[in-house]
Length: 277
Image (cartoon, rainbow, N blue to C red; front, top):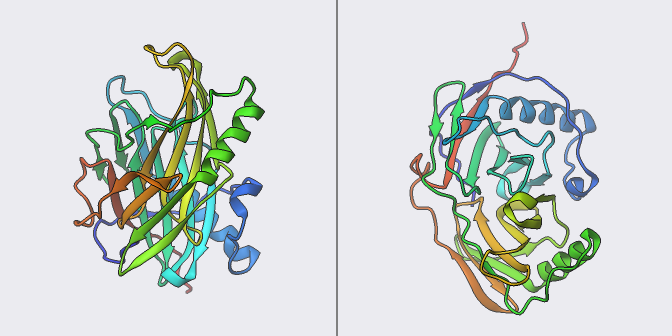
């Protein structure tokens, strides 16, 4: 669910041009090519107005250059949407869904995905300081050991994703689609994270949640294992199943925007536009 209420304001300018991986463009185009390009300029400019840092070290966390996913969902009033991740090594520290609604109402929707504490600061002074990540990893039930090669592990992750299903409750029950191709891939051998991938859970094409699948080698395990976690991108109640068994539940977000210390946070964006003389 994506609310339309105006809360926090952030004035932004337009700059930059970006490209998209082919995977992220599936079913995403609306409007003319020039309209799509114009929105992507605005979207990149918006992401450049926020700074993400590691709280302990104070180091900046770099954003992955391009959006990993793009969509539109006219039924829900979303004209254009993009998904961005921060953190170029290992699991992303945070995920942003940037949405433009009918009437040029734009929203930031963040969820924290890092084990480390992070802080976001907007150029207008708004801050987001989540107390923890919302990702709660658990072993993937009855999963075989991770394959030795990246290609083999990718095949496994795609097979796992097909076993996931999800639905949400927002003015009734709605079935969600779990993508079977990841939008982002990562690893961090220093932390015994052998391989990881980020999958989209969507209503039609609109992002509602994120599925993380990872091959890791826990300190207390003799061999690597598969684990998974689910992150929130929308505010609806979401139920996730694996092999038709419930494995995760996200309760509905009751307060919009959520407190700035929560792992999920939203703010509205106002985009500066030139006016004709």
